[in-house]
Length: 324
Ligand code: ADE
Ligand code: ZN
Image: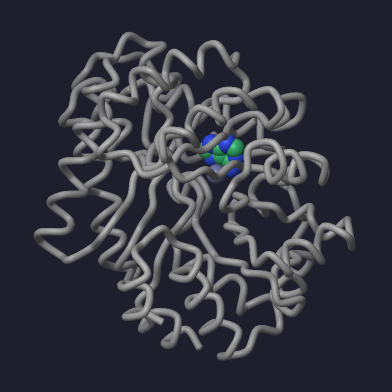
């Protein structure tokens, strides 16, 4: 089964590029850019990755992102992830980036997006890996701030496929960003949002009804509403589930308790993704492997999950036909 996982060409739909920043590169960039980080060694960084919930992770994750200064830094981080795509047989990836994490520190929007984009262009050229960029608003900040970021993004409209919503979930429901997402939709962006990672199903309903999302990122709390499960199934709304992340952030106490098999058996369009692989002990294949090691997944389940990753992607219908 591990062979099957490794052999299958896959798509990844939920990957924060800042979450692919490995401790080794973080340490190197901190030195190069003379940025103070609260760790004396790579081992110390790794030791700090012990989380109790989403917020405890985000605090460390935003501090780590502070080492990214130049366009080359964003290029190097993205290129390192592309190398992981090659290792994991990921042939299409849709990556999130959080501009506000960087613009708040005085780094220009252009520096961030052009560094990422150059690496993605090189990935297509060198390995044939296709990609889309999804810009996320940080939900712990205001809608006004999101609007400002959205205005900056419009200059790069041709290289941004979608708009998403991430960061601290509880207390920051999708409704807080209703107006900016309406604008994003009018401008033709694909819409997604993190919902139902830690917060209850009302966040998923709001993402669907107020933001009109095409996919729900995480969405595992949907299990708590029969009515919502029925809707997700009927409308075949994709859930981009991130198993390792859910374990590391204590959404589930153990892999055996993860609900992805239940969601799959209920015929939801669920996909497997790595979220922030440098922080959550592994890239995409490792997420699949941990699932088969702990849940009663069949070969057919794995094939279905991989097919779902293409079905739920924003690639053209023509390409979808080729991959499915
Ligand atoms: N940003 C990076 N990873 C995230 C996650 N799992 N949930 C919300 N925001 C995030
Ligand atoms: Zn995420």
